[in-house]
Image (tube, rainbow, N blue to C red; front, side, top):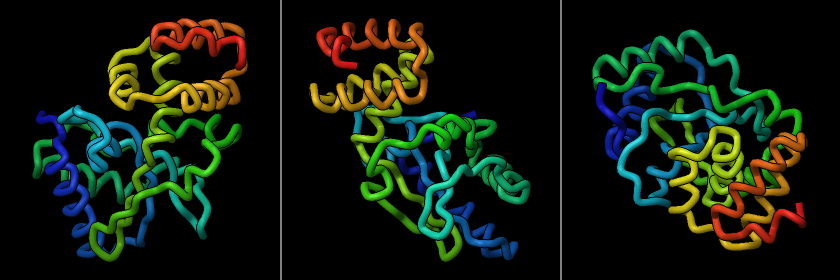
Length: 198
């Protein structure tokens, strides 16, 4: 299965939007984060992603959990996957854990979205650089670095952004184990002195 470039990302979402029109599905407005958002906005040097992470769905102006995604949407996404040779499960809402909506998304996230329409029925809003820093820091600590850490390094957060992001991650996981690992990550990023301010 091929990886998703920025060009292929827009093509896949455009095709999905076309299928929604042809099959007379209801309109959807999703908030996307992760590698797909980084690619769409050109925020980092990475050239590909494996999937499109749906963070939320916008309903009457509010960001709500997108889970579960409608069966008809997953079916249409699978047809797009077959046609464009995309990775399995290329469109998913795995990142939209319940804790995000219980504990809260980063303040002001909704006001920083960049929105693009893929036909009359599919609207995608990509999260901004600041919010990527928050989510990537949490993911890097929670999943031992990896591509999330590399994305974070490429985003080049400043001290204020890292401190704000670190404080937000603590609202998602207040455990001492997470705080310890967060301290290790901040030290790795060259800002170990921030640990005492969390």
